[in-house]
Image (cartoon, rainbow, N blue to C red; front, top):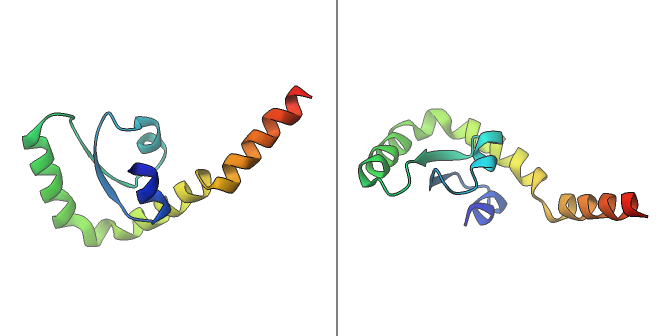
Length: 86
């Protein structure tokens, strides 16, 4: 789900245990404590209430994440690994 959202350039609301390394590197949405429905409610409310002021940040960060996780970038990393082994 997360990488689909990145591919379609859509901000996400996700639990804090979903690919935390991605959220550490890119502000592509908002996180809530996994299993905490009150935290989810609060995060949804915050996301909706502040979306307009954060939309450009989400867009910029999604573009960066999209470049990092694009199939072409993945292929380049594999090529590099293969070349280092040779």
